[in-house]
Every structure is written in structure tokens, then in C-alpha cells.
Length: 478
Image (cartoon, rainbow, N blue to C red; front, side, top):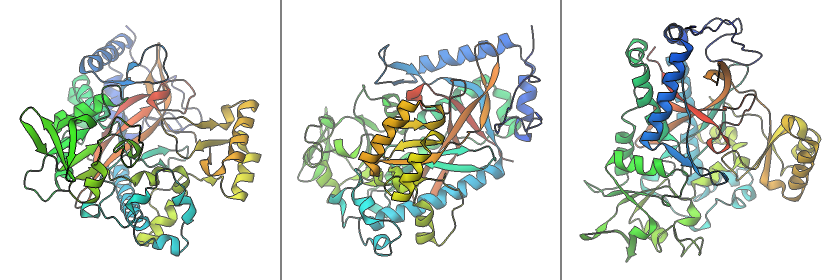
């Protein structure tokens, strides 16, 4: 049986995480490559098939709303991991801690003193016109002055080997359950390598998450629940998984009731007061009395109970204003303004279509740019200029002219690649990186991440809803 052989592996003009431009293995991957080259193609495919079965048996599925062939899919886990050295990870930690600290101060400011507007760091109208800005929160401060308790920023590495922050996810960042389960599966696939390589563990995430939630209550043993939209939500596996791992109740909006601005959970033994809610539904659905009147997912009176300080919500409502892709362009200024520091992890160059000069440049160069809808996610509302048709470009130009506030554009960056198992060989596929941060007394970056991979050859769209998969991320102790 033929052994795994990378002599024909093509790095092309991309930054490859395993091999340098001369096809020499990078130090982080040396031991893993030695292990891989001892396997036959048949054995590798067998290990990959066992991984697919393990995901199904664990129920690691997600829903694809636009899929007419059936909604349940596994988030395909490719068993070749992404391996990151300790010094590289330390840089990411510092950069993410800096970013999250500044963003938390920014959110606190825009809902209170609004100094950032008075000092003309960011246009006031840009924030007030954001669909995620909640006027109801003006003058409000959340427990411990923490808004973004859980963050899942998306990072990419370009052809220059430099990390860039692509976007911030502060509303309901998802995917952490896949990071945790991917690790459990890979530990069974390559058990001897974890100790030999010194891979940092991620198993204590749910314990740290529970501590983060409990920190927001003054009670000695607060009651914590996970609020889910229900079984038909795309991330329901994650909601149930995290609730189970934390020892918290998984509830839907109908399982809660508010009396005298106090939130209670309906149980077989009567009502039980709830102190902290890790909510996994967007702001507009949490309370039909305040937001979407048609919502059946939330709980009437929940928002007022929060404003009165009788329950903590995680993440805090209103944090989604930072997820607005138009705000993203101003984050270097935000970091400088609140911390007096230069940004450690740079943004991707961004053109704001609401600004006349930028808009003209985008329209003239749309064939070379990636255009994004500012309030969209999951890979939707996006035009990849170099891979688009003239008709698609013209449609986006019309959209930009009609609602310039709703669009930004960025140069297309060739994401770094990691070797990935295909039907008959191993080829490079583009990846991004979603590390997870928990904000308590300080900001803890979990020493691992969800690496998302574009399984389609040549694609740079890694989102699971667009056919992407995942890889385990190994962070080394050295």
C-alpha cells in the first residue's frame, strides 16, 4: 500500500501553514508530518471515515436553512490539524485582549457618555443608524461593566504570513462546541502526538464559561440557564452541548416567566428564580414587549428585568453594534482612543461605501474587491469581485448606490492554506481562525480555536452554511 507522500504537494503562491515556499516542512509540523508519512492512503481514509461516523454519533450537526435537500449536516472535520507555535499564539492573545478591552470600553461609552462622538473619533450617525444600536440602553451599565463576555473574532493569515482580524462576533458567537468536540475526536485519532508535541488543552472551557457567568451575580450559587430559540435553530447542538457541560438548564423563552421584574424558570417543582441567562438568540427576539412584537422565541418582560438589574444577560444586549462591518473600519482609531496604543493585530484595509470617496473607488474597482453587507453574516450578502460575473457586479453597484450605509469593501486576500484530505489525495485548502475569549476579571483567550476550512477547491468561503468544514487547532507549549 502506498504511503502518504507530499513530494507533489503544491503550495502555489499561497502561504501554507505546513510547508514553506521551498516545500520544507515548518518546525511546528515536523513531528506530525513524520507520523503522517507512516500511514498509507487507505489508513488515512479509514481514520477520516471514522471521524465522520464519530461526529454523527455525537450529534454534531447543524441546520442549513437554505438547503432543499434536508437541513441536517455534520460540520465536516478534516483530521489534519492546524498547528500554531507558542510565540505565534502569544501574539494573538495580546492582540485579542487589547481589541476586546477597547471594544468593551467603546460599547460602554456609546450608551453612556458618548465621548467618542464628541471627540469625532467615529461618526455618531454611523452608530445610531446601526440596526443593532439599542436606544433603550442609553444610560445603562451592565453588571461589572462588562458587555462582551464571550467573543469569537475571525482571523485570517494572508500571503505575507501576517494575521489580520477579519471581523468581530460579539452578539452570539458560535462554534465553540465544535472546537471542543473536534479536540476529543483528534485525541483518539492521534493519541500519542498530543503529549509528544505538548498541545495545550481546551477541555476546561465550559468550566471557565460557567465561572464567567456566575461572576456576574452577587449570589453564592446563582442559577444559570442557556436560552435557546429551540431545536430548529442552526446551532441547537451547541446550545444543548454547552448547557449539559456546564450543568445548566437549557430553556426556551416559553420556559421562563417574569413576575414583578424577576425572571423565573418554570419547573415541575414550581417557579425557580433565574440569575444569569446565557442567551443564544439575537436582541430583537428576546422580549416581544420591547423589540419584535411577533417573536415567539423570547420572554415578555425579560428586557425590563435586565434593565432593573434583576438578571444578567450574556452577551449584553446592544453589543451587536460592534459586529456592524462599517464600525469595523474604525477599530484602529477606537483602540488608540481608549487605550492609547497602536493596534497589535491589524484590520484588513476597508472601504466604507457611505463615504463618497470610498464609494467611488469601490464602484470603479468592484471587480477586484470583496463587497460585504454590513449587517449580514454566515457568508451571505457578499460579492467576491474577482470570481463574480459582470451582471453580479452591476447588481451590487446598484445596491451600493441605493443604500451605501449597508456596504463595505475590502481587497481580496488569499487566505493561508492547510493540507486537507480530498477524495483521492491531499491538497491545500484555505482556512480562517476563530479563537474564543471569555471576559471576567480579565480576558482569557482559550488556547485553541475553531479553524474553518473551505472544502471546495479554490474557494475562500469557509462558512459552514456555505459548505465549509473544520479542523482541530493545536496550540503548542513551545
